[in-house]
Image (cartoon, rainbow, N blue to C red; front, side, top):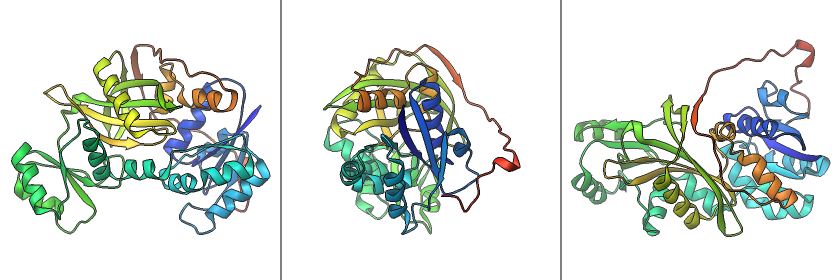
Length: 330
């Protein structure tokens, strides 16, 4: 039985990783970690551990202590804020604690974390992308408006789930969206709402091992419906992006297809994603596939997803008072 440490048990991503581990069958002993004792993912695991917030100076030491005591066979990172910490220490911690940490290198994490850097990365590699400009670059902003016109998208360079995103239809809207804000990027609208896609790619040994593309509907910035089907042009596009990016293991790409038929990627997650358990339902369990490849040398088979629709819904869980994890636990 392989011990798998999953951080971020209170986050959508961490919960999705645990769900995928459970649906992958036997073979995994799950250890979940999170700062909050009321994080539901802690109650889905075989063992629960409380750790500091990633912003806490004591975080890295606490993770080292956890790795020293538990000696997990693999570590899966369940929040964005932890990625850079694990990426910078991956080689050291893997060597010291005889574990495997599934996280990409710091440069890849930085490209994915910054939407302007994402656009520049795609441009350097000749891959279709939303034309982009920084508000402080007046000349670049004018070029963007002259080239593609309105509407445009204003969004934080670093952010997720459409938080702080504005669709602007003219110069007055643009000025209003930029007023009093910093750290923004202005981008070409990548495509219509009904042509939004999310893709999962597994990259090992210098090549794309498997990939899957879902068309999706969004609600409050999250996928609440996904359509599994054949999207060969989209699949070829995301594979080209992955070959340029060269992540370690999983990567998630979010993009739209424009009226011109071109796919334009606007967000990279250099990790598993919130839609990972949805893809597992379709027959592509990225978490299970990655671990069996890393820990047991199993080949990653091509994706053979079942066509259909995946519907996401809320659920609830009751925890008896005598089973609650104490905030003083470690």
